[in-house]
Image 1 (cartoon, helix red, strand yellow):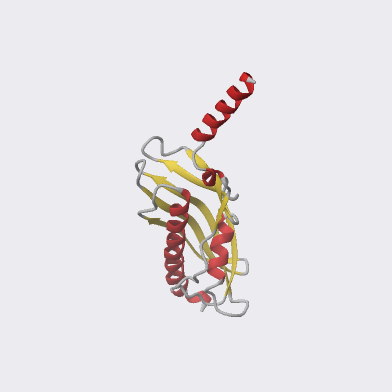
Image 2 (image 1 turned 135 degrees about the horizontal axis):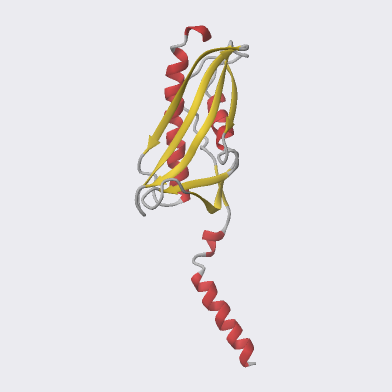
Length: 182
């Protein structure tokens, strides 16, 4: 009987140390339901990401400790890989029809970067290219940093949605400046 009571006491103590049970529940995020403000001409869109950003893990960096170390949130995930999330948002803002050009997107960074324990920013880096058939018209790098991303996954996801909107604004202006896709 004493062993049973001791075991219950240990379990109760461990449960208390585990924090709120809701914190351990898996959460899934995307970039939201609001269509981006950016407007694109009709385009075909091809997207991909470099490893490790080709999965659904939500990554962060503790830049104040080691900026080259990536970690992922244990119970928070993207609904799809970041390249697919960006592709979906971009397609929501393109014109109708097959389009004259293909916009190729390669996601190279999609992280919440902490400059201190309480302060972070959402960071998106990508290489983009415009092509007509086998011919590449133009290419460039795009980096967007959204400040005030909070200190947990949910605020980071909200900041990442803002960063994605800003990245699409940059891309829309760049595509509009390319005469080969008009």
